[in-house]
Figure 1 (cartoon, rainbow, N blue to C red):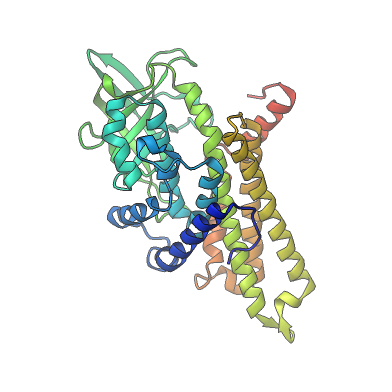
Figure 2 (figure 1 turned 180 degrees about the vertical axis):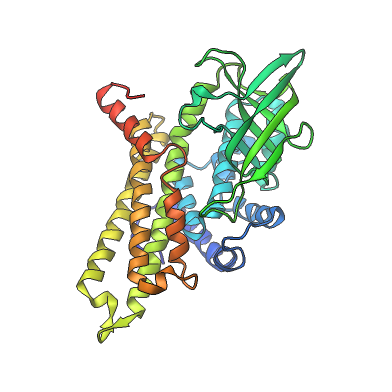
Length: 387
């Protein structure tokens, strides 16, 4: 059972409980044993994505009219926490495919939606979102990948890096520069991997290696202009709005990871005996567990607040930044303390906490580092931009 209580409706509780049971029985053994720090092949990952679609993962953010379940953002994030608590590696393709599906429904032409959205909803296909580039991280306006018009086609050249789903991807939604205007010169273009082609190279990392993170190379790739997502030059505003919601999901990813570290620490502290009693009975260990539990719950509440604002149709730039900042730093602290509670066992591969600690280190980096979140929060408070 998960540590901590969350206020849920009966429908939310049933959905979360059903997903949790499935993950514990059929998914957790894969990522904690069979594919621990080992790349999961596409066919295996796709099989999991198909099963997860039935629980509202990926399909949940798409409306019933477009073939999805039309869940609210809060319920979607509650379900996402369960996936992240089971495996952050699995949560990555869930997150990327969900936001790819959401973007296609909201912005893409009817033809592109009809061709690419059903596969994402069903779990049969994978998308990558091509934003980051070498030397271009948080400042999206510096994107250099260039798309130039050639009649009814775009000719695209450039390099994208830190691209999730890269090796799995069937298509790439690529942020390209279509003019020199820094704000109004960015356009999203869908590139089909089989039809148009792009080169993918994997990136080895400290963690998150059971799924695909890659570099993507585009060398004069020829793509129909009809594959443009939304209006030409209008991608900057959409990308920044995308970050607002995706940061809440990355924050919840950190909450799930921290919760799992706390659960592992609680179980270990109740079973490990030192000085004549279980270590949970030692005051310093008890204090550590209390601090960890409080950080997990506080982080979750920040994410839920952002989700409630999304569902109310309100902007939540500062609130999402706060959730991402606090939750990701909390994950680092909680996972570190879980290792400490395990003592020497905590640094061995016999216990999950060493893996959780490595994964937690990654959390404060994607979707804008902790420092970027702090600048966003300060800007919202003062009205003065530091970047």
